[in-house]
Length: 90
Image 1 (cartoon, rainbow, N blue to C red):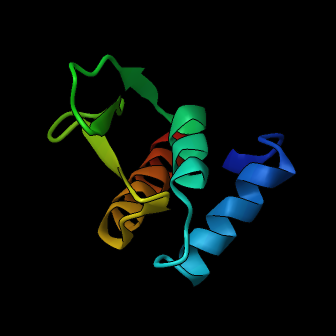
Image 2 (spheres, rainbow, N blue to C red):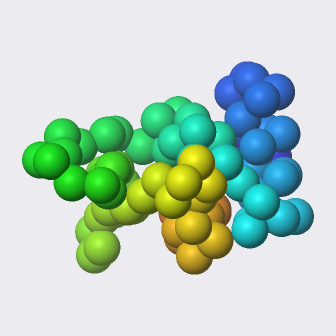
Protein backbone atom coordinates (compact mmCIF):
# COMPACT_ATOMS: atom_id res chain seq x y z
CA UNK A 1 0.00 0.00 0.00
CA UNK A 2 2.46 2.56 -1.15
CA UNK A 3 -0.10 5.39 -1.20
CA UNK A 4 -0.76 5.04 2.54
CA UNK A 5 2.90 5.13 3.47
CA UNK A 6 3.44 7.60 6.27
CA UNK A 7 -0.23 8.38 6.89
CA UNK A 8 -0.02 7.15 10.46
CA UNK A 9 -0.89 3.84 11.96
CA UNK A 10 -4.25 4.99 13.24
CA UNK A 11 -5.54 5.82 9.73
CA UNK A 12 -4.37 2.42 8.45
CA UNK A 13 -5.99 0.72 11.44
CA UNK A 14 -9.27 2.53 10.85
CA UNK A 15 -9.23 1.62 7.14
CA UNK A 16 -8.72 -2.06 8.02
CA UNK A 17 -11.55 -1.89 10.54
CA UNK A 18 -13.80 -0.19 7.95
CA UNK A 19 -13.14 -2.99 5.46
CA UNK A 20 -13.64 -5.77 8.01
CA UNK A 21 -16.64 -4.38 9.86
CA UNK A 22 -18.36 -1.47 8.07
CA UNK A 23 -21.35 -1.61 10.42
CA UNK A 24 -19.17 -1.13 13.51
CA UNK A 25 -17.44 2.18 12.74
CA UNK A 26 -17.71 5.23 14.96
CA UNK A 27 -18.55 8.48 13.23
CA UNK A 28 -15.37 10.03 14.66
CA UNK A 29 -13.29 7.31 12.96
CA UNK A 30 -14.95 7.91 9.59
CA UNK A 31 -14.54 11.65 10.02
CA UNK A 32 -10.82 11.19 10.76
CA UNK A 33 -10.33 9.23 7.54
CA UNK A 34 -12.25 11.82 5.50
CA UNK A 35 -10.34 14.70 7.11
CA UNK A 36 -7.09 12.99 6.17
CA UNK A 37 -7.85 12.17 2.53
CA UNK A 38 -10.33 14.82 1.37
CA UNK A 39 -11.03 18.55 1.59
CA UNK A 40 -13.87 19.41 3.94
CA UNK A 41 -16.51 21.69 2.47
CA UNK A 42 -18.37 24.18 4.64
CA UNK A 43 -21.80 22.92 5.63
CA UNK A 44 -24.77 25.17 6.14
CA UNK A 45 -26.72 23.98 9.17
CA UNK A 46 -27.06 20.41 7.99
CA UNK A 47 -26.47 17.08 9.67
CA UNK A 48 -24.20 15.99 6.80
CA UNK A 49 -20.53 16.75 6.42
CA UNK A 50 -19.38 17.00 2.82
CA UNK A 51 -15.88 16.40 1.52
CA UNK A 52 -14.54 17.28 -1.93
CA UNK A 53 -12.69 14.67 -3.96
CA UNK A 54 -10.23 15.51 -6.77
CA UNK A 55 -11.98 13.83 -9.70
CA UNK A 56 -14.71 14.73 -12.16
CA UNK A 57 -18.19 13.26 -11.90
CA UNK A 58 -19.57 12.99 -8.40
CA UNK A 59 -16.72 14.79 -6.64
CA UNK A 60 -17.94 14.60 -3.07
CA UNK A 61 -18.33 12.30 -0.11
CA UNK A 62 -21.11 12.86 2.43
CA UNK A 63 -21.06 11.49 5.95
CA UNK A 64 -23.63 11.77 8.71
CA UNK A 65 -23.47 11.14 12.45
CA UNK A 66 -26.06 8.54 13.44
CA UNK A 67 -25.96 8.54 17.23
CA UNK A 68 -22.18 8.35 17.31
CA UNK A 69 -22.01 5.64 14.65
CA UNK A 70 -21.21 5.91 10.96
CA UNK A 71 -23.79 4.67 8.48
CA UNK A 72 -22.56 1.48 6.78
CA UNK A 73 -23.38 2.66 3.26
CA UNK A 74 -21.38 5.84 3.88
CA UNK A 75 -18.44 3.78 5.16
CA UNK A 76 -18.57 1.85 1.87
CA UNK A 77 -18.70 5.07 -0.14
CA UNK A 78 -15.68 6.48 1.71
CA UNK A 79 -13.72 3.26 1.14
CA UNK A 80 -14.57 3.43 -2.57
CA UNK A 81 -13.41 7.05 -2.69
CA UNK A 82 -10.14 6.23 -0.87
CA UNK A 83 -9.53 3.35 -3.30
CA UNK A 84 -10.20 5.66 -6.26
CA UNK A 85 -7.78 8.21 -4.83
CA UNK A 86 -5.18 5.45 -4.46
CA UNK A 87 -5.62 4.42 -8.11
CA UNK A 88 -5.30 8.03 -9.29
CA UNK A 89 -2.15 8.58 -7.21
CA UNK A 90 -0.35 5.48 -8.50
